[in-house]
Length: 407
Image 1 (cartoon, helix red, strand yellow):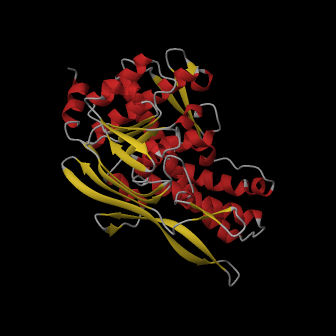
Image 2 (cartoon, rainbow, N blue to C red):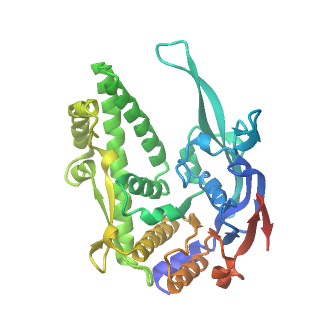
Image 3 (tube, rainbow, N blue to C red):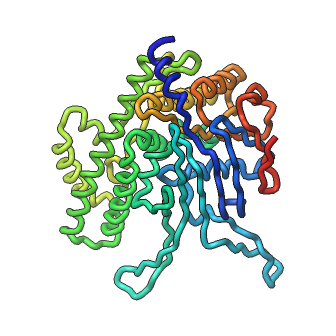
């Protein structure tokens, strides 16, 4: 056994995963509790029964907007009700919540996240609007930031929507990369959220014609500092994964080369961060007119995460659907191994209909890797028989009528 395999084998003896998951008014579930082993879990049932909703709930135990990128208001359970006109209205609870008992390297943590409503006064008026925001508690104590979740739990996922990851616009790829960074840099989530907040404020000020130069300069200075820190973290993660993949290529899934295409990342290749901050601040000031003209300013919000099939020297977007799925799994596996070695605990895998576009050889290879890495993976399928080889290693749960039934 080589040194990498030996180190991984020793580290993955210390498991991490979800032991208990409780949902309240989340999507189609009024209430649901799952008691799981820290081992693979297969969820099966008909389309639309709520399998993916369970994976999404687990993804909310990490920073960010979950595996669907949904608005908080769209996640709560909606209940159809016939009104006086014999048509349907939808009522909904005020809140939704996800709670979990997390096992991590011999310790147990209780994590909970929910939505709470707050009232904000609108600028220059006496009107108010109701807002929803996520709150997070760890062992019963409310935390100041979602970023704290990354210290206790990590998840990585593949969904059917990601089958188009390499062919669509750059935003989903950028979000995918940022989630990879979260696992190594827990402050990255906070920085990206703060940058997006400042960017929206800056954008709206310009669009509304409020040319308060002092205010805009202050926003641009903060955006430049955050933007350079975000770009630097992205560059570091891409370099880390490229090095890992180069030295430890997978035996089944294809090797990839990862690249960043962005003006700020490019500038950081040969300039000090403090100098790039100054350039970014000046660039934002020069690009104010683009916002007024309904054009998109350049910066870290335009960075693209590019993936190449190394053996064919081909960009992922030109590869076949099956090859793209294999390339995506290659990145996920490299991230998982890399994180395990660097942080001492592996992410939980959330694999939604992962067998689609995989031949039997690659499907079985993926299952073998999950077993060998001692990972907890939550896998959904409409047909449990395609995971028959997993019967002795995984728990199987059937989802029906908003309930969960163990085999």
